[in-house]
Image (tube, rainbow, N blue to C red; front, side):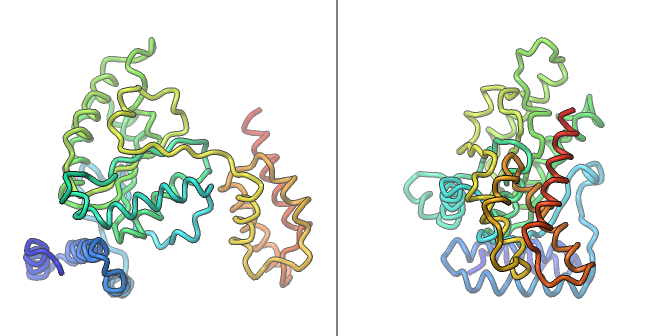
Length: 322
């Protein structure tokens, strides 16, 4: 059942009429129950909270004033079944989830669960989606930190902002995604580096080393070669994402088109033409095809319609390279 501290926090938040705080603690209770193997109870608590939030309407997040616009919160509803990545990565994600749920068993043997993770790979290959799945499966809030904006807008006080974010992790357990992480994780010996950025990176290394919160920290980067090598030692696991294989592209297309997919679909042509596109681009192409089918009163999406949308995405990709 819920810990004594969680029960006291629930009572305090209720008496102070702090609904969002109450919801956050209730979700922590759900996560705690999931760790104990009480999956059905965790699911029921989550459904009750989701229903209550919808009835109340959008809530204003109680971030520190200085972090508003830098940290975004969401409660993802994306299950593992929606995640299209290679089997080896699916197994690694499953291991993170399993260790989190069984962390007490590991701690009893002097071991800690994986909670500091780095996702590495090209844009659109499933890194952000994986973070959303982790948050959903662990009944946690997802907090996305816009690292590039943090650096460019608050140059000179970035380290102080980072401290506030790590303090938030301690107060509000969740999945914290540092997107575009290379903005602060750059190699300290680069010739074009400046003293401020070295201080920021050193601060991050210190904060992540000292962090002992119940939060899951995820850093995502498209450019691993730019990262300082000292960073990799601070993470419990590093997952490498790649452009999707033919089987991945087929599985994603089936998932997104669903009942809209036409019989006798020309898979060979579609898979050949979609080669080189990311999962995100294929997802968008499929959704564009569905919209076209709906707007022109077509019941199904055939290969010809999807190919038009795929070619648009390929053209956009070539334009970006040019």
